Length: 95
Image (cartoon, rainbow, N blue to C red; front, side, top):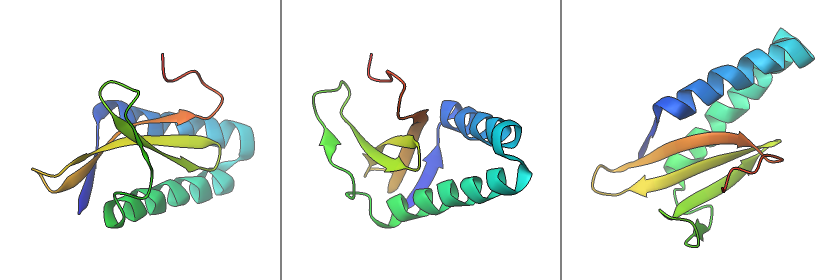
């Protein structure tokens, strides 16, 4: 399966990278960015890796990566994983 990032997820990736540079420096921000990309690839290869959160509407899957959560859903008709958002694990992203 392929993956695609929503516009909001693309913004999240950029913001995470910029915040990483500010907090930890360029080298660490680069490493974390690579780990995010590896996680996206993993989810494309293993789309059922995270449990479905049916209590949320619409239902999504949530995979942790570092201090962030990758919120995604499957789009089987398109043969892809849609990565909706990447949120900090301490955020109240469910409301």
